[in-house]
Image (cartoon, rainbow, N blue to C red; front, side, top):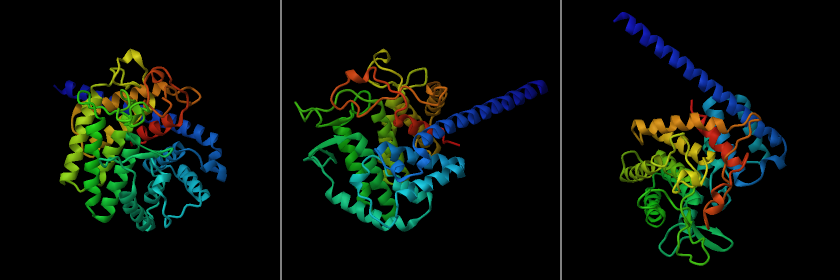
Length: 363
């Protein structure tokens, strides 16, 4: 009996040691990926380095998260320089139309613990609620070339904005709007069998009432980001929070059913695995927000933790020796058609890096 206990203790100690080594190895690997990215962007030393596509904001948002979680003071200084070069002032309104998919200004203000952003932020949130483009039945839309489209990438950022505004003001009008929009998007875009989402509606010129075909993996990543982040700001145990949690569980159970045994999700998750490819950005986003949901008690169950662990182990193989990242789908997703997303994986697309930074920022 005593020998059995000794062997069990040795097994646990060795297991913990191996696990600790793997975590440290992975952190070093991700830090090298970050260093490569920063080098490609001149370490944000000049004004020209700090402006670009929304993927730049998305990556800096992930860098803020990584710096905070890992207490990386060197990276924190680089982030401070980024916003200094942007001439960032928390007291100024940042128009929502300038941040359609993520809000790096909010992330930085919270990171710096500067509450002066709140008044202009809330003012803009009420303006958004009143003036945002909508369909005839009130679903929020992104405007593109003068036309209005439903788009899940856009929805996730909108409901996060509403949830943060509710938290900062205590005004449940934002909560009501969140649940209403999720119900509309679920009604129009969520497939009843798989529980996954179409990318949007209105994009197909020949029939604007038709939803976009199939499902695209990074779109599912956007949706889980929106749901998990939204719950964090809703009043705990409220009808609003319980409703969004229920939607999250329903959606995530559909996602779990589409994960390959190798730990990855595939770019076109409604098709057989052989018809597309294991995709990094969506897989990492799903795993990261699954982990957050489990850690905060929004989800409970071994299957969710197992899904995260499998993805973390699998995704490392897509980081190359030069710290570039493969198997990333280009955008904008399956708005119009699916065929070109069957085998269009790209190398070093910034969507991949931001997602991997998030996944491996977990302490």
